[in-house]
Image (cartoon, rainbow, N blue to C red; front, side, top):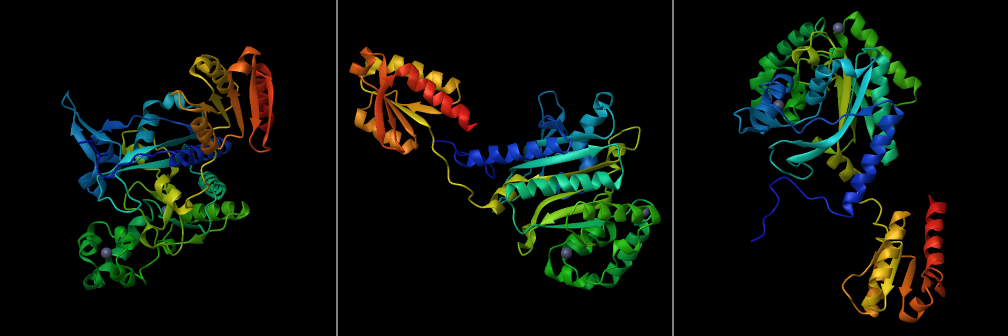
Length: 421
Ligand SMILES: [Zn+2]
Ligand SMILES: [Zn+2]
């Protein structure tokens, strides 16, 4: 019996893998344009990192992490998210991080033991970015603009940007009090989960997707009415920097994060009408995280993450796969295989995608394969031509063929490749 993949994990095969490569390339290109450099952190971290960063009482840490004890008795976890490892790396290498702001991006798999469903896997992938060392509203606007530019270039249509501010330790406690007393009066109308968390973490109730909770909290107080002076200035700063960059947005005071270290700006790109899974990318400011992870100084930080599977799903099927080869080499007799193979290697070296058959199939069958490959040029290596150092060059698009020296055929294909670059 053959073995299947682990539940909730999947293989990415061609032609789908080509769409991944394309999207990763697009994200990299945008990151570099906005001044973000790539960081690669290990897949495994000490479990304590996520317990501290993500929070002991969150679903992720309580139920969803792939945690195990390794052979030396240490508790390790396969990363469930990308921010905590990047902050850890920054604190470990603070001296190498250079001048502030230090801007990083990452691309890679994350692992959570969730119930698999459409669009949700246990190994899923994220594009993320984090900028450290500045609390200027321009840094927030820059991260949003980077993401906005990337999503537009990827061809995502109908996406809208929502922003909010969560305040800071100065002004948030008063809001939490107001929200908690509002929720206390509505207790009977909330779902079981929310009734449990209303006292401990009232912000999460605003995040609940249950219809009864959405209805019960429709008139909940807005955090934007509770912001202190500096937080209000910061929020207005982000809004005007976005407006002056021509980026449209709307305020959503219900957009919250359940964790303490989030400060001020939060933002999401959403597709209206997509229900609970409408968020394509989400980000926010997390000035308090570095200190929670043992940093000596407060490190202002803003970042975001994009769910790659979700994005690919929203982008739809995309373009059909292109031809698998540009040139196909047909060999009349196995004795000519060495010569044809040498020529194929020359084509590959100059950037021409060439293919041929190594199995000694009939010429007719090789032509069928050439056809299926979509190759625009077929080179036929025949015995008579070989004596003259020549091949038959067949242009499939024009339906023309001629006998030319093998050298000339290779040069022509390589020159064409150069011109098209
Ligand atoms: Zn609820
Ligand atoms: Zn404040």
